[in-house]
Length: 396
Image (tube, rainbow, N blue to C red; front, side):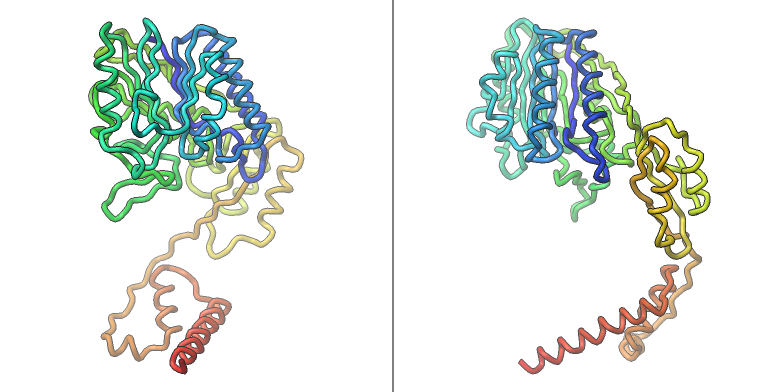
């Protein structure tokens, strides 16, 4: 079995209000060309086809045209597409019957009572268990293993078994995802999806084709058979790594897959200036002036500031790119760390006797911040409003 694994296309994504159709179309063209050259038996798209649950007609047309181009590039290939957490499962279900004429299987919703509905048998090639994104509370316990057990019983020829899922797996590298956090039990959640264990995804597959995490990687099991293909193009500036698709070859069931990474080029790269660390505002403007005029990149500036950026900073940055092909997106400003002073120790009685504004000033000094006259005025207004609300509560 030879398969091409990709995920997280996020078609329709805009970057700081810039339309990305041109670069998305070029990325899809590259993927079609890879199919034409490599001629895989299977093409797997593991979720997040679209960036929103309600993509425009133009974005849906781009997806449909790509499916046709993929089929024409290698008509013998079977295509399997599952919904991700950004997708509307219903949209993937609507045209699943006519898509079959092009050997395209679109899986949007989970059939809770019948895992067999998610099993796609490709004669003399192997089996695909295609599971779309589903919230954990709607996923029956042991569902993945039930589907794997059905395939195990049917797989009398020892053909390769592939499973698809769109989720966060414990132990993965979530670099580039700015929506990651630890919950109360110190388990990672990425993009609203709680991390699951590999044990919950069952056993018996030869390759687990994962989607959701944008950084291509193996999740270590010792067999190199659990993999995020990653997104073929960056969705944010923090995804400052190569993007690719994965070409996977599996000899027989229970054999270790061989994986080749094929890098995808972006005609509009996402560039952060400076490439490492932060610059002063004057240094950043100089870097922007020096940036080549003929590179159609998106630009983010990393700035270190003492207090605040100049009010006209964004206008200045935009003006510096006016005659260039690059597109200025944002300034990410970070205050320079100041030497912190130790807050004086207070008894509870002393703390209660202090004026609130004094406590706030001490806190700001300890954190290395500045408590200027404007902030003092705002703080006093808040304190007065709280006192008025307390009076109203006392009256009632």
